Amino acid sequence: MVKACVAGASGGIGQPLSLLLKGCPLIDELSLYDVVNTPGVAADLSHISSPAVVTGYLPADDGMKKAFAGCDLVVIPAGIPRKPGMTRDDLFKINAGIVRDLIKGVAEACPKAFVLVISNPVNSTVPIAAEVLKAAGVFDPKKLFGVTTLDVVRAETFVASITGEKNPSKLNIPVIGGHSGETIVPLFSQAKPAVDIPAKDYDALVNRVQFGGDEVVKAKDGAGSATLSMAYAGFRFAEKLVRAIKGEKGVVEPSFVYLPGVAGGDAIVKATGCEFFSVPIELGPSGAEKAIDVVNSANDAEKKLLEACYTGLKGNISKGVEFIQNPP
Ligand code: NAI
Image 1: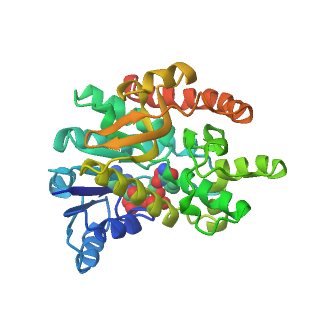
Image 2: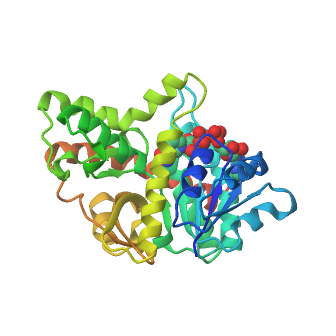
């Protein structure tokens, strides 16, 4: 039996993500938590004839605890999204506290759950989550994931538009580092099957993967950031994780994790100087079973991108850790 919760379920990401989870035959129970509208979203989804039993909770009457109770998986897209001109870091002031409080709830109600953080800035909200779980004495690094799958999905799509691949999802392109601007580093040299990116297209392609989110923010013109593609990406990661938990072998997807707590992670910390970093992760019944070191095989152009990534990412990580260790 698998019980999943979406925290932030009434939002632009939360609703389509909850729809995809409701349609997934691997999920038996789906609880929806938000500060608004969950009774309506839950009633609507509950009419879909898939197995998952859907319930909705608001903060009143200990709703968060009830939503989280018994969960195997908590997916968190709660918080405000970007508007034109904003960076993900601009969201910190509001989203840091939202994530902190939700993770406190997880630590109390379902300390053994796998936690998937979507709320931005992921580079800081995941360290916040780790610190809160540590303080509660329930931190298991194998179970905490920053969802960076949208960067991978974008890389697949944008590369296919250059190479002519008809089905972009057949491409496997590691995108590593963090989840904002220059901290996002696509490793086209390690794509499988191999891809040939013409030199004249390389810089623009890297830039599009790093700043693809801005295309959506601009096109939505004040109405938010990526929601549908993010729901797809969040579901892709959640579904892969559930398949791995249930025993499927060879499931790999990049994710932003606390590397010292994951097998193979120490070598990557040594190379990058970052304890939190996204690399391809082999998933299994205990969660992040192995971090795959793609950093050391990056080519020269990618190594240059990585240098810029480390600087930005270290600052974002410290900001998250500080927020809990020395609260403002
Ligand atoms: P939204 O504003 O449409 O939805 C957010 C939802 O969170 C709302 O329903 C709101 O009521 C709820 N919420 C606010 N405070 C809450 C709390 N304390 N507890 C529970 N729910 C709460 O925003 P959207 O577009 O769904 O984005 C959500 C987050 O996801 C943003 O931080 C955004 O930047 C991030 N995001 C992350 C991506 C990634 O690749 N990791 C990609 C796109 C967005």
